[in-house]
Length: 579
Image (cartoon, rainbow, N blue to C red; front, side, top):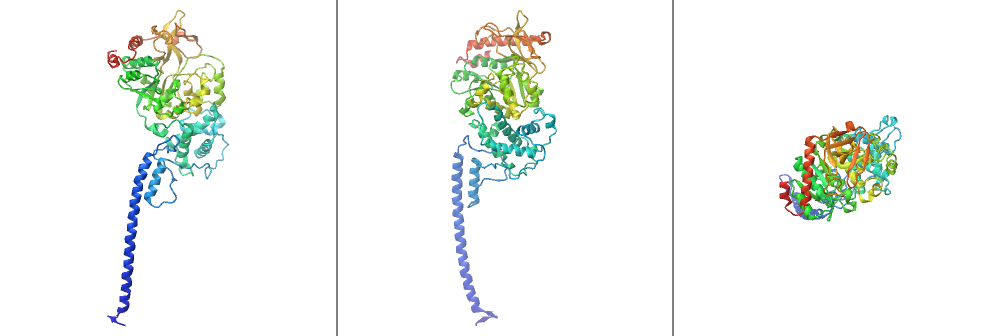
């Protein structure tokens, strides 16, 4: 056996040949693997580009399940269990992000143990409303006040109820059942989007991470008309900013709305931006829209571009949808025939508005006693809030509670209430309500009661502003004071009766208002407006200030000019500057 310095050279040569062979095999295998990986990467890159292209073409349909949170925090993701590469996994995650297919767990896997008294769903809603929105909302008896219910248990009950709603429907006009569904949605949505401070003890609970997807499914079920322009309620909310005035106008309202805007701009110097909404082609004519648009800082918008036509938005019912669609976060809505004696923006400083995000005004006190409207309302609202319990309507002192000629809403806080008002004004859900209330006006506070949300009415009931007749009554438009009972605004314009004579004007000298709901009315006629005699005329009838009289007289003159112009294409921009 040949050796070299003691080494077996024959064995060494054999081993070296095998080593070279193995090295060659390893090199070929490495090159082949690298080539395959490169091909796979290139293929995945092409697939990624193709997927991006497909994903971007996927339309957002009304029944798509889009996460309500911009960046939802979920512990369990819906991704394929088997993936060939991180690239493909990324593609699948993008598709899931575009069309969410999360399966909501019907029952919490580990129910929260609760040893307190048994609560029904109404009591859960009441407790959660108090926690979310404050004590101003809930009415509780002594037994309910003593109940200490942990939020973990309330969330669990809301979650379970939410999953049940997905398989339920309600009969037309069953506002009791619908109210429970709306309350569950409202409270779950508010909890996960606006009250992160309450989530500390919930984030570790099984299935809490699925709450956002459950809420999204409920949103699609309860408000299927919502997503024509924005993919979700959260996206709609993110589109709002600033403050402004919102009006709605059809053909008939055109001269009134034009006059209201001119009076705001020219008489009071109000420079808030204004958005005017109409509903679909034919609601207003082109020259009317052009006349509005000639006024600085005025935008004209078709509300049908924002919501699915299944909502049936028309007539009075355009109003809440216009408020919801408006780009303003804080809005003052005006009827077309509303005129002010003060800058309407003072509404944003009202104490009640700051507390609740709403400011409503009372209608006239008319129709004492129990009417079918009261029976209908009390039939489905079994447990009103403290606000409603003190209301004239609940105590059968009037058949009309609210006047919606002016509505102030901070949508940043009261968005859920406004969404609910839109729901009650949709074609399929308003039929029964409209047989019991006059138009949209009562739906604002009734929905707040239904969902158990805070709201605020400016003190004193609807009165009149105009002239004093031979019997001492004050006759004129539907008058409202501010928080300090000073003349603020009225509804009805400057005509004696806008439905009959277009050349008979009110002489504005006095106002009357109502503190007691114990008043006398003279009904309007062809030659006379409404006339009011309050219970205490010495303290509830006043004379307008010289400034108020001068402003009202100027508004009368402006209306005459608007009538002459008619808004037709007669160089309205030049006429407006000359007014």
